[in-house]
Length: 95
Image (tube, rainbow, N blue to C red; front, side, top):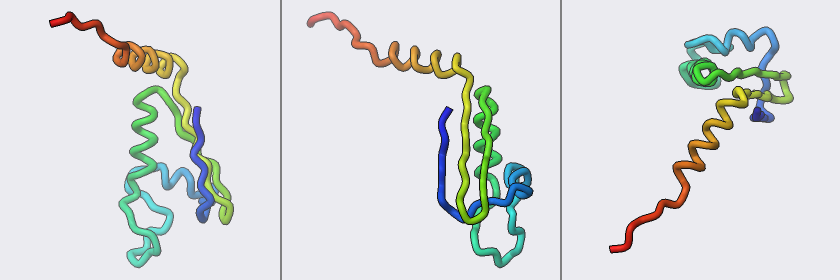
């Protein structure tokens, strides 16, 4: 598990499900203050779920947002073992 914390404007609790959906933004106005397609969080959530994990958002207007990402322990252990094996020194024959 890891957490990402920002101290931005925050998100109202009622708006969190909306911004987790593809192509959705809290402010749909054409002259909105912030630009973007509304794909970031939904793509991130989908990617995490494809790896057996979960993404949760906690937020408060004027305080900021905390994103908590969790992956199953076996995914992390397997990945760590693969990295260790890949980075292990190899024996080479002398020329």
